[in-house]
Image (cartoon, rainbow, N blue to C red; front, top):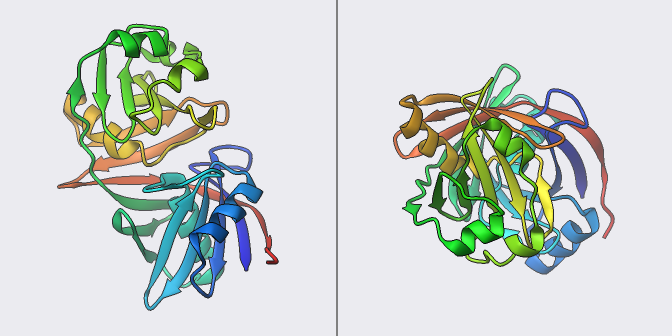
Length: 257
């Protein structure tokens, strides 16, 4: 099958978040997809199969399948609209999280994700012990969102993965704050994988409504402060979040099974 690696939310290679994209003519078993994702050893490998006018899309980490992934969706759309069907300016994916539409807008690829408003919860001793600090606020969704005092607090946050791993109610841990050169900034940690995700599009399904309410605006620019870094151009709609970014190709080849 055709295999690509693209850096998503990036303007040049070695920036943003790399994702593998496997393009198959037929459905594969979850077991086979998991083995391929483990072999690829990227934070996410996306699997595409054409079904009529749409593409089936699934996302796998090296260890498990997840329900939503932003950077691998952006990478998949970038691959489809540049290397599979370059005449397209829109691609529709059907996923376990519903239909996701991605449109090309110049150099940007605009994804329409479901809005996931995280409820505010109590800051507990368990959470502060795991984080190693006392956050201003805590919000709970698929991931745990800790609002910190300022951008510098996000930049200087040092994760203890052993302690973060005790917060096993959530898939990932995000620390976030109002930005200096962007509307808001964040970092995202995967305790089970013991790594920091370079750019996490799916987390912005919750971060955008959170910061939209705090800042009183629906169009926001976000920056993820990982070592590779990434920029996201976001807009809150009626029940959905529009997340846009750029992507660049790093690799294309074939997988032999």
